[in-house]
Image (spheres, rainbow, N blue to C red):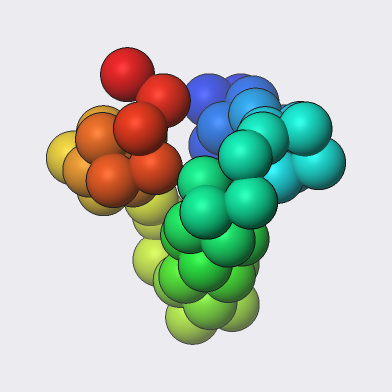
Length: 58
């Protein structure tokens, strides 16, 4: 759970300060992860790594 919260904070910070295209991607991933949480699903390590790669963080 701690890692999920850290990831959410990382996405939010990147969305505020990132390049416009990356900020949009970050917002989309943040929404997707939030929708999973609403359904009671946990975010997998694979999903977080995929999101980072898609946004261009790694």
